[in-house]
Length: 354
Image (spheres, rainbow, N blue to C red):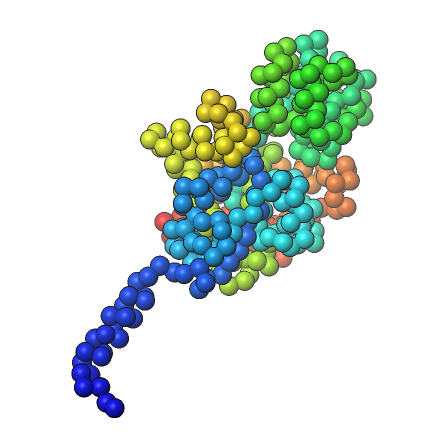
């Protein structure tokens, strides 16, 4: 039977369609991608972004930033090593990782660095007992730290800058938490350790006679914390939007951290996600872990000639210390093929969309 009120029917259809078009994008309608992250100051940003509802890290749920970019970000929190395993085995699309550790997975899973998050500026340090005042006193002693990581890199680079030979020193593999506790308890033979935060702060607070012999302030910009995304994931529908949403969430949380009204609460929230540190400790932490808090600084890192020089040095270290069999091919733009790419284009597109 024909409708008796064709005008009303058309009007009703129009209203329904209008409501449909103005509703927020539903999670079931958008592609989903995952980010593996572990507790570290500039990576805990993503956990806090979820906590303050900038994003919703649960699968099938969208926060405002995800709605803006039309993508579902699934957060996978785990220990750092577990995150590396997840990324290397393809169990996540992106990972929070260092510029040193990203080399190995890139050999089998081509990756793109879309976002530098911070750099170590004292967050990695060689701590010594009160009887040691000169690096030469470490000859013949074991220096404990996690081998084949940024700890060993920081130690070796500082030796180079001091004119010392690596072969004269005994860097000895040990979990940083265990090494820190051993020094704090003044166990025999633990006169020198190389660890990162929070172990640096904890050891200095608990053992008042311990001191910093040298740290990562002597190698500025060489230890970079970042987000890498698999190139295959970026190529999928919604892949670029996923990268943009991650970038958007990072800078949005950084704005909260810089704003006087929300800075303290944001630092406290980050501290809760990073070894349960209090506000005072977090104020020190963010001095020693310098955030690349703005798009401008992020772009500068990804495009600077200094970054290329640093990556050449880091890759050489990883090969000579048998961390990787060979260095991946590295590019610093979006052209050509490369196993590892540093691409500022994603941050630039984010800035254009703001």
